[in-house]
Length: 567
Image 1 (cartoon, rainbow, N blue to C red):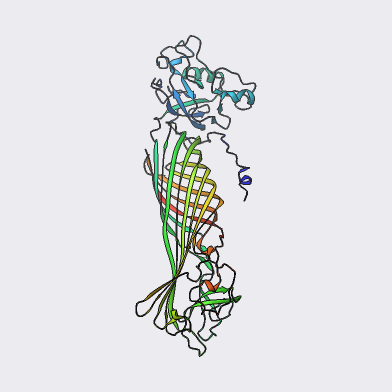
Image 2: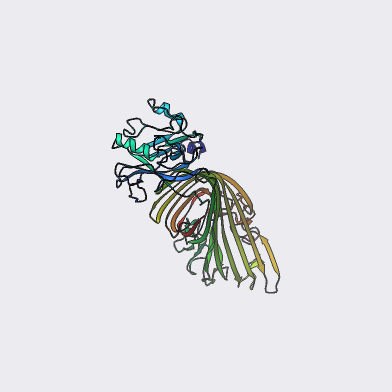
């Protein structure tokens, strides 16, 4: 897959805005008993302290104290350099510097939508709105008729007013007296009502959750079969024979749920919660599934490339026919294991926020690791000698092992977007990430055969049945991978700083190597210990079983429940 094609269409749009809220809120009200909207800082009006910026929330109201809120957002308020004064201290001033506020951008651009107002960096306004009247430098409030026909003109401190504007990118918000004058001039003129809230103290956040996920099962070839003991020995238990039944394999396995844990944490780099660094780690612990059988007839099917026919290795066979060569009693077990873990480190940028909604962009690096294993073990006792194969002398215990282990590690970067919506104490959150990088593959194959005689003598051989000298060893490869991830949550605020949640997650990972895909049933039997009496099997130049390096896509999905703390 061409990485350039995947990346060519990616554009990160950082158009910022604040969503609309239509809820009534009695805390937002004019001051001094007025029935007209006004600019206030709670009630009664209090001049801003000179200690520096504070975070406030702003809402736009229509005429009338009980009218619906048209929009809302979050801004910063900073005092100017003049001594503070309260409304009414100097009744002759129409631009009392001490009773107004300088409003600086919280997230640029800050937007009050649905015809209310919009604030943009000044460098973009001449191009977008050439008839815009310039009054102050920095952030400016537009009065273009197509955007806001009833918006009051921008007000700046009058000449000779106490102090001067020194805050960069600032907008002067009129005092109550000034707003009342303009309302008298235009009854439909909306006004911004400002309410102070404490500076953001929730600088650190973290969560811990329980995971209950399912994996996409791995494909296994036919590994264990059976057939009636009356079937001729040369085709008994071979694939393709109508009397053969596959007991294990030829299907997906490891589809049971995994339990795990995920932790996340981060901290905001500024009091306005615009930029944060966060990271997380999760692990879905190792789960083992298995198969075991000890019936009278058990075989392990292969394709014998030396003779070009379907073949098998006996694990158990009673030898009831006069033509039978083998009398074996044994069992076979197949074990699979899987474990998934990963982590990420990201920078979060707040795109949009108000009291009910927020959107953030994320960019960072991520890591994933999938460890899986497949192990096949035979335990066989021989009851009849085979000419030129002393391994089958009566009483010998034969143990055969084939082991396939894979490890996939993803290294890459990701872009993501996170959105949340709040209704009262309930909230809903969505997350999407797209990771692009490289998956490093490691395949480890081992095979062995151990023979223990009744006298206690032990003989060891290199190679099992499906793991022989042609594929035993450590093998590596790498491939390009894409890792999209989706997360959904619904939660409830127990307190201001504590909330509980439940969620659903989906993780997809392309080009992964899994153990079952690395099993090759084509076997050059001359490489299998004790399979053929010397000189009875024709030689073959085929180096099989081989390592197929087959790739497939992997996914993990499931539910979660957890607890989040903010402080």
